[in-house]
Every structure is written in structure tokens, then in C-alpha cells.
Length: 196
Image 1 (cartoon, rainbow, N blue to C red):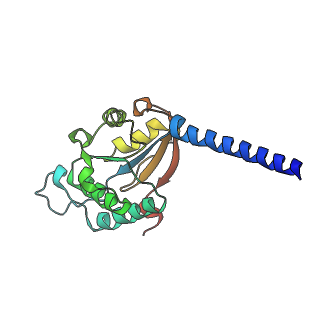
Image 2 (tube, rainbow, N blue to C red):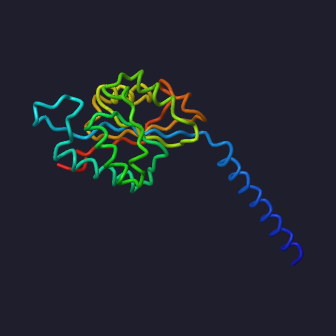
Image 3 (cartoon, rainbow, N blue to C red):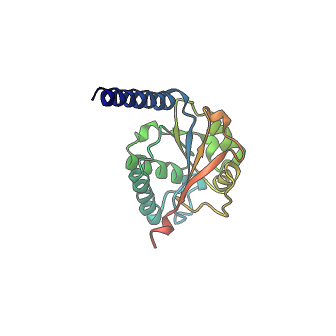
């Protein structure tokens, strides 16, 4: 009986030590950043008096954005920070999805440089994210968003569809380390996969 008690105690000690190692690793040594690259939803061309910057979402855009937001919420893909182009169709998309995932839409960071941004400008914005943020959403426009997915991963897409979402993960401590082929594509989704 004494032998069994010693053996059980020994196993408990080993398990506790192992659990502590895992906890310490997650707390102090985790190296992971997650980026959701999200193209704005479908926009309207109905009012020809509006500038490109002012064009709002159309009915399909207002259908697709909450649908994709709900899909993100189902997978607990909650952002620590959201960056967005200030163009009306982009910020409308960002606010709708923010509502669905429980993010305060008043905290969305709008950056004029993200409007029709080049891939180098998008990369600069991502590298400027504070390292306290582990998960970030970025909302913008093509062709830059498609080019960004292709630059960061070894996965090539021809076109990131409207309201399409590419999730890229990086084994990195800092957003400054994000760069060409340094990410892995974890998921890729868009409305037409689910809606007609």
C-alpha cells in the first residue's frame, strides 16, 4: 500500500510540473500572431453622383457582411484590434462584422492610407500594430488584399472575393516580423461558398 501511495504521489508531482511548464510556455513564451485579411463587402454603383470613396454597400453586401461575421463568431475568432480603410463600403463592412464578433465598433482604427492601398502600404500598417494585440482584422480593397495574402503565404489566390476572409498565422512575437512567406494560411472563406 505504501508503494502505491508513493507511486501515485510521484505521478501527481510529475503531472503538476508538466502542467506548470505548459502554463509558463503559454504565458511567457507563446509566439503567435493571427491576421484576418478581409475584403470589403459588395458595394453599390447605383448613385453615379457619388465618388468611389463614398459608395455604400448594396443589398448583397448588407447580406454577406453579417453572415461572414457570424461565421467568425462561431469559431471564437475575436480580434484584439481592427484596422480599416475609411471608404464607406469598407468601414460599413468592418462595423457590421465588429458587431457580430462583439468588438466595439467605436474602437475601429480607420487609416486613410488603407484606401485602395498597395501591398507595401498594407504591410506597413500591419507592422505598426502594437505587439500586445495577438489577433488583428484588416479591412480593405483589391487588388491589394489579394496581393497581401499571396505575399504573406505560400498559398496563391487569383482574387479575394468581396467579403472574403483569409486567416494567416505567424510564429512571431512581434508584428514587425510579419513579411513575405512568413505566414501560413489557416483558413480561407467567402460568401459564395455558402450563399447563392
